[in-house]
Structures are given as C-alpha cells and as structure tokens.
Amino acid sequence: MEIPKIDALQGALAASGVISSPTATSNSNTSGGFLEVLKRSLDQVSQSQNHAESLATQYQLGKNGVSLEDAMLAMQKSNVSFQAAIQVRNKLLSAYHDIMNMQV
Image 1 (cartoon, rainbow, N blue to C red):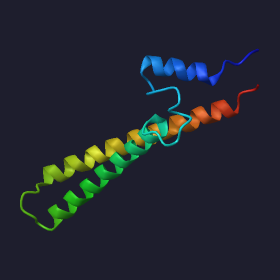
Image 2 (image 1 turned 180 degrees about the horizontal axis):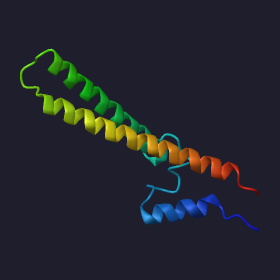
Image 3 (image 1 turned 180 degrees about the vertical axis):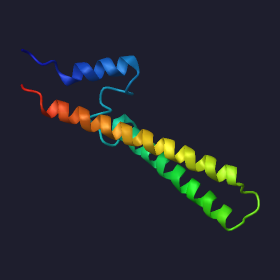
Image 4 (image 1 turned 90 degrees about the vertical axis):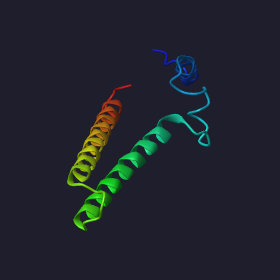
C-alpha cells in the first residue's frame, strides 16, 4: 500500500482555501496554520475569563456602570467558551489516540 505524499495533501488544502499555501505547515515563521489558530482561540478564552472576573470584581466593589446582569452574562459567555475549548481538547486527544493506535 502506497501512502500519498504530504505535499499533495498540502496542495489540495491550499487549493480549497483551508491553508494559505502548501508551505504554511512546514514553515514555522508563517502567521497561519493550525497551531496559530489554536493559540489565538485559547488566548480569546483567557481574555473572556479575565474580562468576566474583572466585571465580577467591579460589581462586588460597587463600581458605577457595572450591573449584575453584565457580570453574569460575561461569566456565562466565558464558561461556554471554556467548555468549547475543553471539547476541542478532548477531540484532539481522541484523534491522537486513534492515530497512535493505528496499525501500519
């Protein structure tokens, strides 16, 4: 059984618009690729949690302009984004285990 080259796969992904160019995954200095998207997503989850914590603290201190509804809504949004990140992590681990358990 012959395994097709990765270059052919990268070319197909570039043609479909999934990656920017066939060399995007091999060049670590490019600003794209799966790792960069994952890092940006985790940064957004972190920012969402920090914002929710900040609003909760401001509400507890009695700052003007911060309502309980705003704080609770921000907390729920950060919780949903965190749960989504956990599910992505679980899927990635499951895919990794599936690939590692494949017999060649």
